[in-house]
Amino acid sequence: MTSKLADIDLFTPIMYEQTGVPHEAFTTLRKESPVYWHQNAGIRPDDGVPHRGFWAVTKYDDIVRISKDPGTFSSARGGTNAEDYHEEDLSQIQILMVNMDPPDHVKFRRLVSMGFTPRMVSKIEPKVREAARNIVDAIIEKGSCDFVRDIAAELPLIVIADLLGVPQEDRQKLFDWSNRLIGFDDPEFQTSIVDAREAAQEIWMYANQLAEDKKGKGGDDFVSVLIAAEIDGEQLDEMQFDAFFLLLAVAGNETTRNLISGAMRALLENPEQWAKLKADPSLVTSATEEFLRWVTPVNYFRRTATKDTEIRGQKIKENDKIVMFYASANRDEDVYKDGQKFDIARTPNDHLAFGIGQHFCLGNGFARLEIRIMFEEIIKRLPDIQMTAKPRQLRSNFINGIKEMPVKFTPGKKLG
Amino acid sequence: MKKIVVDYDLCEANAFCTKHAPELFRVEDNDTLTVLNDQPGDALIGKAEKAVKYCPRGAIKLVEG
Image 1 (tube, each protein chain N blue to C red):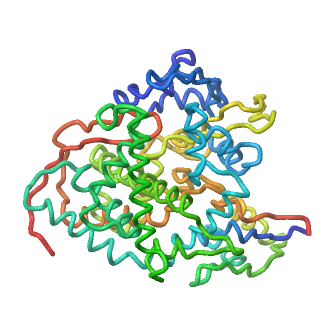
Image 2: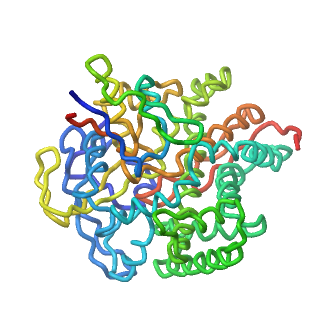
Image 3: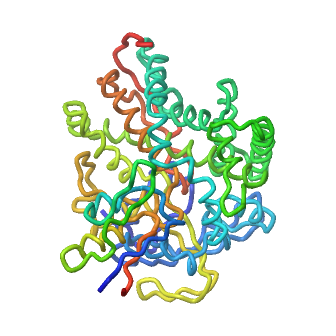
């Protein structure tokens, strides 16, 4: 089934809540209008900024090309969300690495990337395994729980909290802040942009205090390493550190949580795939990539043209907004045979769920580790898990998220 | 003759290049990249092009050399 071109709406957040990611619309666009002028939904009621239309890019190859050309397609000019911002909000988001261009971006990223290498990732594997075991221990005697809150949300929070040195008792704060920052369109999590600004302020104060506590103590934890990192005589200053803390608290939290929830849902909705995975748990590595492709927790990122250019023959004007829909690229018929089929053994699987190019998700190694370990634990200890109600989708065009997913399972024994 | 050029400011040891072209690239245990042979030649140019395409950071280029 396909959509009529004129009826296509990729923007209205409540549509995502009601009917999920608009894959039928993406299919139509890839076929009929791969670089499509999309009228925006209009003014967000509480900020009075008129929102312009944008070019919706839905083909894999175009997204790769745009992503690898930051000179023409800027992340800083206008930021990387589809919305337009007040000047003051724009300058605030431009200190986040995701909204920077070279050369600032390259410098900043070099300083923090030392914490994200394959070696750093493998260092925390034992801790992640222990955390996954504890997460299941916490619910296994109950026979039922909310998969999102009690299973999916926990592991990414634990990893970030651990990396940032945020103590156990402050983890709930991270959870609350993150929801208030990223859930802008869902009234359950946030009432307004004002609330988002306040949440950002609170995170900044917390990060500041944390950096103060660690400064000059020569620790080898992630935060101390970040504060001490130096390249060509340059170090992260306080504001840059705070901005990075903010980015991490949001980027590493929501996304992985939503991937784990979305993947569990996909497995339960495709029982032959779930059975296949349980019968051969070594498939969890290829399954992880298929989870990423299928769920694509970050639906899009936006760029702004720095000059007149073209995409696939379509003329683009300087300052035009370009929105890259990764969820569409990950089903592109020119790349994937049977892309609309959920196949945990799919190979090759060079999806764009982590993006590509200079902004390629820095946390991809941590995410892949968390996903693999969480599902190894679920396969082992919750093999008969089932949904007991329809999952509730996040009201957002940016994040493919599940807010609540009640499940039941045969109660078992704690291991820890 | 095409030559492999790596921008080490962009390399983050993701090792996709090693996966696609193990004869040409090796990521060491200390997360540094070694280019085993920067002149792929006709036999390995296909694999070199894959490494260029799939490096998630766009750190690899093939230049006329």
